[in-house]
Length: 135
Image (cartoon, rainbow, N blue to C red; front, side, top):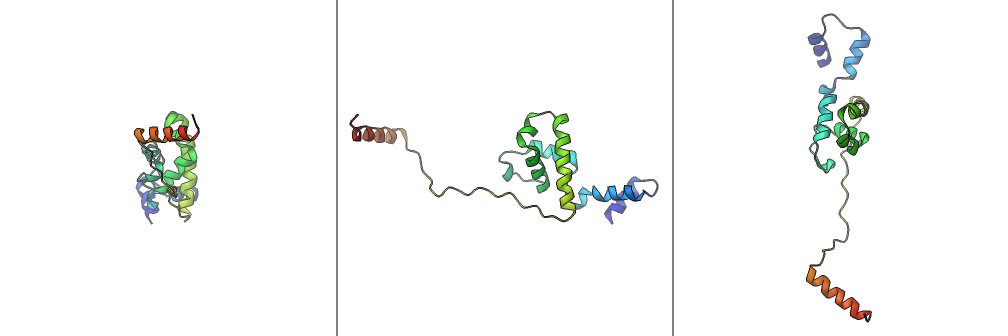
């Protein structure tokens, strides 16, 4: 019903069915999705690591991932925004159709965690290695 309220607020006359479908297809706010430009700005400002950033919606993360984080951070908006917009709209369409987006999986810690030796211990280990090789 919120789409109908939006149409009543924006349109003077009743829209065609095609226009009504367009409103329904892009009713991002009803699904907690930011508009395209807000999502783009959020992707640009997100800190590293991207997986740990507090995203307004996971669709923004996945659109940034599909667009390429390096491309987003290194190219001008006029080049990046059309690519980001395409990716974001495709992901938003999936969300609107009911698909659940999974949170990114963090890499596990390694089984063995080694602690580097300090300088004195490194020199002692090197001396021992030289002695064992008769150098």
